[in-house]
Image 1 (cartoon, rainbow, N blue to C red):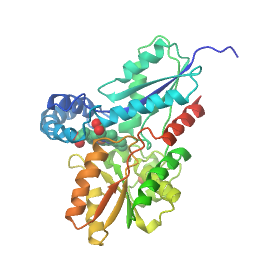
Image 2 (image 1 turned 90 degrees about the horizontal axis):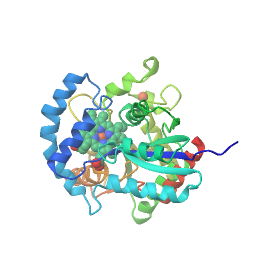
Image 3 (image 1 turned 45 degrees about the horizontal axis):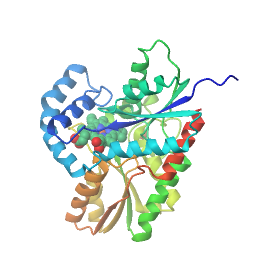
Image 4 (image 1 turned 180 degrees about the vertical axis):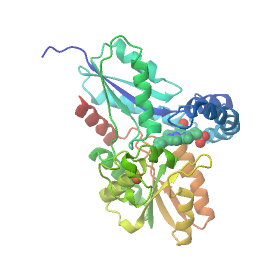
Length: 342
Ligand SMILES: C=CC1=C(C)c2cc3[nH]c(cc4nc(cc5[nH]c(cc1n2)c(C)c5CCC(=O)O)C(CCC(=O)O)=C4C)c(C)c3C=C
Ligand SMILES: [Fe+2]
Ligand SMILES: [Fe+2]
């Protein structure tokens, strides 16, 4: 076969504000929450909710939270993704692959990342949304945006997407290594897996034949619920717990970051904290495997706010396992995902 262009690899993460100013946070929240896959209601009520209620009132509060997180290198979500991309470049054969990185919201944009690849005359593009579990609000939205941009091109090369990677052996191994490192330093009574939440409505909408009832159906992972976000989260917990040899009765799954009044997937992390406290649990190790980079949701929400709640309710230790960030085994996982799509 004649060897033509290289394969382009596009890593996409969620996005983060450009700075911690209230104005930049408001701009980020507006772009993020006006995505019809994130707040999945019709355009006019969504516009009113986001622009008249959420963005104005939430922006100052969120900006203060982001200030607790910000570093000399800016937002951790962004700089960890930059580091990840650089390590991936080192591990992939440069005669075969070019790598770019974009954010679904704010900067660097997916558009600029795709432009970079197209300028290098790639023959094919592999898009890797950096979300382990598929959700319409995350992976679905990335796919949507990439296709929207490609729609404007005269020539559209082959484009392929990684859907989810919860069962990738190197994804599981990377979490095992991070968990083990924490467990070598301290003894824990319980292990909590706290995932980003999602409105229940979004799961019901994606359910084939009305299979997803948001209850015991998620205890098994099969072709019937392979795209159910909640089922994928429970499956992620089971697989990481098995890697670490954790006893089933010491492991719980829960969901954080509920926004608004509609029901989101349950159990909520806040309720789980109350339950653990009432059972007299003192030492908890928390994993957050819906994220592959430390961000507001891990460092501040789980690592600070939930920790305070647990301690106020009588707990002694609430420790967060750091995210995959640019850990070597996680980079190896990406190398394998890319090779398997090539
Ligand atoms: C309706 C609102 C939201 C849905 C649905 C949602 C889904 C979702 N989000 C992530 C990952 C991340 N979310 C982050 C922040 C964040 N998320 C929402 C709202 C929804 N998310 C808001 C309003 C915010 C901003 C912060 C705040 O004001 O609370 C982040 C952190 C970004 C950072 O800069 O650090 C991530 C990552 C997933 C995986 C997901 C569905 C599965
Ligand atoms: Fe979110
Ligand atoms: Fe389900």
